[in-house]
Length: 296
Image (cartoon, rainbow, N blue to C red):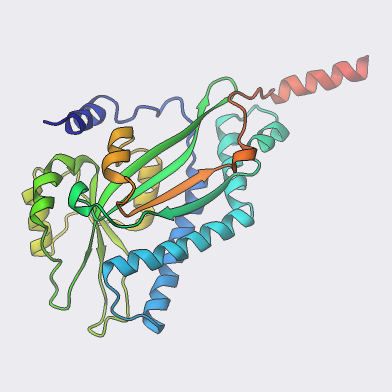
């Protein structure tokens, strides 16, 4: 077993929920990302129907990236990322002073990048999905410690006109068996023979497969045991329930330079990042200070 494979098993066996108890959960922020993704899918379906029938999987991914970037930019311009992140902060620090939490979340935005293709032959995947978000420890006060990353290695498959999903390459058969814990299939298909009507994206997460042969059989038989929609995948990656946070796997397999990867980043612009640790007083403490001021 190579170093990355060994680390993969250690990561998922011993620390799958490594930061669950002390890192800020961001369900409301993730819902903005889900909404943007769903709108981008809908816009992609319209564009294919009207202008680009029969697109292959690589073109679908490339055009989708541009549409998702537009939706995230709009959500950021409308302060939706900042607003929902503040809700997540309030849920984690219910007794904290609102104005201080608001200052902490101010300026947060989201964007997405797509790496260019070079390395499918190395990673075994067709595309990586990674979410990068602030790592904020939920201690007595928020403590910002850079970014937390989590990703999923994916193989995009497009069902052909005969109803077949296509075969895996010999390279994929060689490397993917060691990567099932953080691997999934991204399934594109058309409703009609003319290939104007693209279905919603479906995903099959492969961490439950007993072997890669089982994954191959799902594809051959067009019988995926538990397909899910994109919203489910975004939430589960963001909630660290699927994928991996292992830095070496992320940098060398899921999102290396040259491997197509959709990287969704929730972050502040460089000049607006908070300091490492921010003191946030409680509502009670704030009231006491006001009383003291009045009494003085």
